[in-house]
Length: 125
Figure (tube, rainbow, N blue to C red):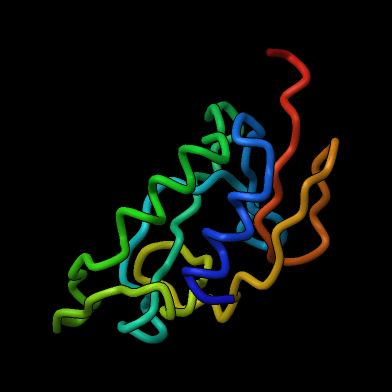
């Protein structure tokens, strides 16, 4: 999934839903950076701590839209400008996880079966 597709899909989700990343890098989107595997691609760095309040859909959209047109420095150097057609990965900083984002799901609870962006209604709001 590229950056534009991910943003467009998230805009179809309820804006106040919390966002989690499923799979091996389960957590909440924390920041974006140049992906270690392909510096010209975008990496979403998860915050994997259990006590962290997840970003909601609106917050993640702002984070991703900010990346468009921005120049990021590759892990070993070089400058790379992100665009709507930039591929998106989930990975710890400095790691090439090989886990691309390929789905956004709106669910009422958290599932952890594959690498996707999951939005869910926060039941304690």
